[in-house]
Image (cartoon, rainbow, N blue to C red; front, top):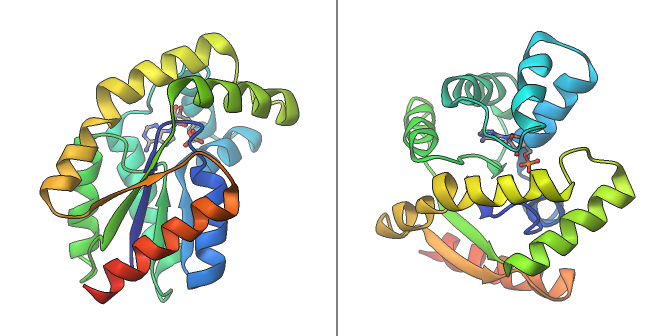
Length: 192
Ligand code: AMP
């Protein structure tokens, strides 16, 4: 089972991914975590990624697609499936993901979209910035990230809805209640 956990920045993708992989034994790919790890290790990719992340912009598609290809090859093969968290973020990434999975006789089984109001997203990211020191969680970068989300990432909702794969879940409220709704969604996808 391969799932995409979809949503705006601050919608709770990281928190809910951790719970999903625990329950379903899937492999978690968070592209944001992969990039932050490269930044911390001062690799070439980290230096490139930092330029984009600090401005709230997306890393070029070709770079992201290569990262996903490598993770699928090296880390995710032989697992029950994958939760994609933070990828795809553009239509070009979604099309590439389909091809990368097809090459491995796999496909996306469902896309769960966490719906959270914008004022709540901003509140959550500012709080995360204070608690973790995450440098792109400041108001200026958050504003840019939300613009980029609306322009480049949000169109994926329609893209996956047309494929019959999109399931929207209320991402506000209690973490366990949200997870309960996600598992209902996943279970209904599995039965299909
Ligand atoms: P996240 O942790 O998912 O919020 O990602 C943090 C930042 O990493 C984003 O604001 C982007 O700059 C970059 N990033 C993460 N995933 C992607 C992706 N799939 N495509 C382009 N940039 C990405």
